[in-house]
Length: 71
Image (cartoon, rainbow, N blue to C red; front, side, top):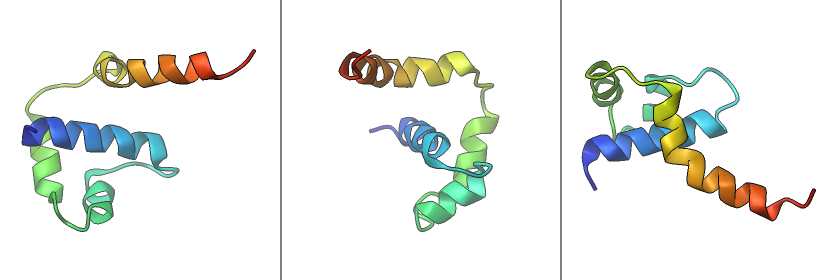
């Protein structure tokens, strides 16, 4: 998997599971330094990201979960 794609997916997981403010430092610490704070910051500084980017990556899972929840 492309390193940038991996960082993006890890950060999405971090956003979803972190109760406090998610940061590049907290993600790096969570990954035991396997991706440095600088790697994560560099990735996010090369392109602006918006909610549409997040939605494109989580939509499939959200739809699947909504289908499993009885109304």
